[in-house]
Amino acid sequence: MARPELRHPANAEGAWYVDERCIDCGTCRDLAPITFGENALQSVVSHQPDDPRAEQGAWLAAQACPTQSIGTSDRRSRPGRLYPWPLLDGVYDLGYTSPDSFGASSYLVADVAGGLLVDSPRFAPALVRTVEALGGISHVLLTHRDDVADARRWAEHFQGRVWVHAADRSAAPFATDLVEGLEADEVLPGVVAVPVPGHTRGSVVWVVGSVAFTGDSLAWSHERQELTAFKGACWYSWPEQLASLERLAAAARPSWVLPGHGARCQLDPDELHDRLLALVARERAAAA
Image 1 (cartoon, rainbow, N blue to C red):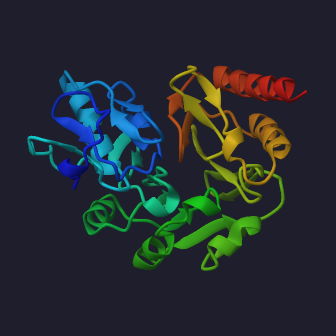
Image 2 (image 1 turned 90 degrees about the horizontal axis):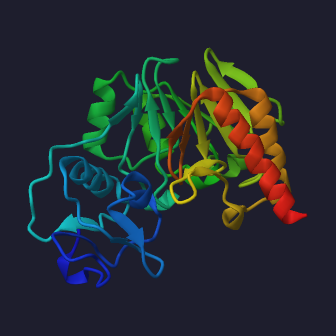
């Protein structure tokens, strides 16, 4: 629950606020960019929600916040539990982000290979119950070492297998299945692992149907209205990341990008492919 005595002074006047425990993960800004902005390395309410859709976005951000730093001064009643939040047929945002993964988003894909958890939210009993109601989880797909969070607890609860790239296995020693090398591989029916070393040595994009779950390797930028990658948060190799994104463009033609950090997008597959190659070209030119 947000703490009114810690309300950041840069919040816009009104009921909604972010308190000073915010870790600047950016999740609220990606979910509700009209309502939330950045100020001095933390998120604040830059514009009070003024219609039902904006209010809903604020509640989604509040329930996703890893430090529970978003709230209302009038203690208004929240509209029930919003997560899992449906994004497209059978694909859900799980909210409940973990401070252990710096607020990274995670996702449920129902009815594919017995249910897929992509990266890990907090192991919250209320969320566990709703995931059970949606059919549960048979596989946990980790995009990279940073977003493991409570993956072990989820896998143990549902008796599921855990997939991670061998280069990042030290962050998930409980993993049961390894992705290796650089080649794209259909590891389960309808589930393709595309290794994308760069952000970390063992980063993987998981492609399930029309959706690319990109971890911290690729996202959409609300500010630039363009695909983006995080050069300033590239822990292994920026040149390798650009080469990886080029291989991703050759390996898959998704229409959705669902990242751990950064905004989501849906585009025509050919447009997304062209924008991805343009991103690689821009960044290589900037580094030349």
